[in-house]
Figure 1 (cartoon, rainbow, N blue to C red):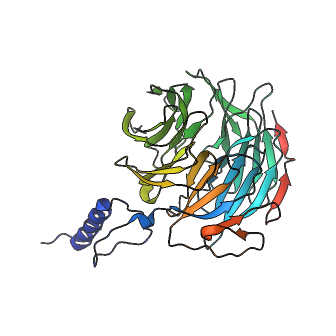
Figure 2 (cartoon, rainbow, N blue to C red; figure 1 turned 180 degrees about the horizontal axis):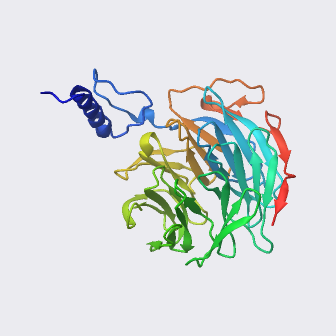
Figure 3 (spheres, rainbow, N blue to C red; figure 1 turned 60 degrees about the vertical axis):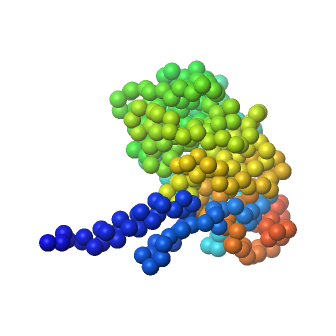
Length: 383
């Protein structure tokens, strides 16, 4: 007797085989049994569709919101900017956030994307309402500078690395809930938290990353031979992407005992912090900035470079792949701009009077006289 739903299972298996056999799989369309599935390079975001020009200095960090509807950027000009992703894929300036007295190092979206954290360089963290652009709260610790910011998965607590080598947890009102020193002998400029909130990952010393289990208090180390400059956690929480000072990016499986599974090379790094990210359909690709003003994209499983994106005129410091649109990638550069990369066959309609069209179909957006509002932070403070 044929088992129940046997035909359905066979169809699913056939589609899975097709998808796994597709080297460049990055399609948002469903697979079909009528034709063999194949994704070409035209499915990789390699065409600059927009250049965003709201910042007046180097852009150091950027990150898409969890729902893919917003992009936030941080700059040496002491501001952060919130961009809205329009329905047709065009990015429009929503808010310019001011109030930091030092350059803004990074931003972090709340789990529900309704709030945004911004962190000044060894300064304070500010919490903003995304819809209104108003500052809700300022977090600081007397005599200590804050270096990084992030949210706990419940959205009710925030985490920060401090320049005294500690890692502190606050509630939203600014009351310190916990603080860890552990094995750290360097400033915690990067960290990540697992979706269940149990695992905290942070830089421990120049060439090591600490994996701290809050429940068991167990500490595990990832030991690298060279200095770690940045890292990012995969969506499933099982893999860590580590940027090193020696122009290599390492992929670590941290599901159990950490083991290095892949190495990516080709990008340039000599002086600056360069950030990379997972991205594409099922996070099948790795993207990174580079000091040669390019964006590099690797096939995650093979380690092959599949695209090199040119267009910036300064070092590319950070990249972010839209988590809900595998065809949208953003890059931040020392040339004061953000580039939005999409499919070569895509076109962006010119919609707002504040934008201007450049050559090759690239649209400029976010100039000083464009859309959006400037917001000065005057939120409550906690120490």
